[in-house]
Image (cartoon, rainbow over all chains, first blue to last red; front, side):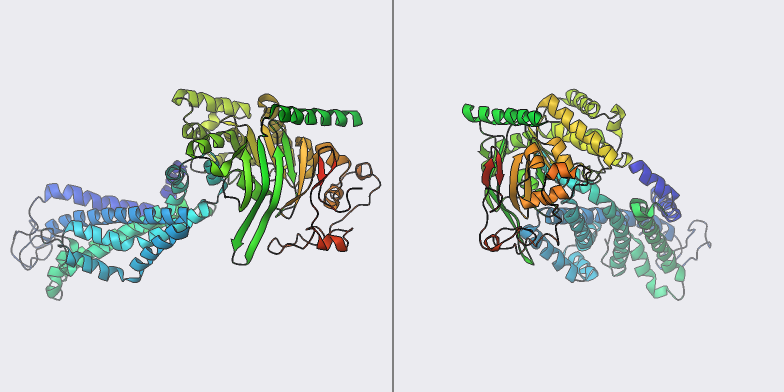
Length: 278
Length: 341
């Protein structure tokens, strides 16, 4: 089953492109720290060096003389970490709420869905800003804030899948075996509800990276960690004289978000059996 | 021919009699079982006061057209929904009052084969895992013993041993139905409920599956509740047949009695619907009955006899008074004002 899915992913150009871009970003994040071990906050060179001016600072420096290449590597790590961790939290909360609501229905479902709606009616970004501002801004609070605001669509998706699956005959058959509810949910329903969750989680990673960049841009990022949003925020006043300070991390965000969107799209095609025949 | 039927009847009655004298409760007994589903459109009377008895090792066929409550009955017996009224006694014990351990023990003795072979197997589980699952849930044997049991089951239903590593989408409908039967058989149940188990299959595959079920009955003495809308299939399988119409049992008799001398007009209509060159011999001199119209809505069942809206013999009494199941012959009961006498 999973081998077939893998084959479909490898036949999908969008998915391969997304995967390659993602591998490139991961390589930059991992290998970059070996080549550029410096502190991204330290003044490393003359300020406002354009990319290529000095071989020591290949991507130039900002107004404080901080090395942009070092900052980019640090930002890549932050973006990937925040993206994966908050999408994981979002999937965990969303699957739990959706699975319990869809499986038990009745008042359990009503209660869980009202909570879900509560989160859906508050604008996501505003809630994330409030959460980060109330707790101390750090990578951990950013991860939790983004995870907490982005789970409702996953919950709805899992719930609707469970509502359909629970009436399927293989689930009834498992019930007539005397299988316990947790076992029924984990071994029978969840594996069949998972493919769309994988797709939505890939897209959630992209959204999480964007949200983290926005928070850092607003100065709500971790004060000790250089992220792409921080670099853009710091460079915004020189955007006319030195567009590269905002431009380089901007392009990086664009590429990573594009990578996850392409990957999500490709997974969606690969996991959707109706599209296989085309 | 008559002698064979007679013989068949006496052995059956004999078995039932023997049980009664030894005071062994029947394997399955339904007492005034009702199920009402509450929907937005109103209350759906899916089952109304159904009484049925199934003895050990016996096959009871349940026939009726779509929507008459056959599947609801099966799901009530499997405890997938609770009944609205009445009792289900399995081995003399009310299933609604069982504790957790009793419930688990009952699940092992009472299994089901489902209608749709494309929906009844988990698409993300290998066949081996699907067949092992019942043994894991009921803690039967260690890993080696379970694997051996899975191989035995696959062999028993005529599938290759390598099937254990394959997934449901790699099998045909008939093969999947055999896997479904193997799963039901895994715990060696006393009763298997077959809900339209062959309806979704091609005619050529159907005979294969029916013969497998008959083999298993001969080998292990398993009892079947065989639900179908196909009277010919039910006759082939069953010792006794119960005919349902709109949530009620209208006639119940040994298989050959239903076939030879159907008493209820609805049963006669079902007989008329079987395409056969020998119809004359089946129905004797009786006129062929062709039903008009659809099954009335179970949201608002007709007054009096439920069949009166479509019955060719309906009279004023049928609209006013609901007929009760009455004994017409030994082991033959019918719910019609005019069937007896």
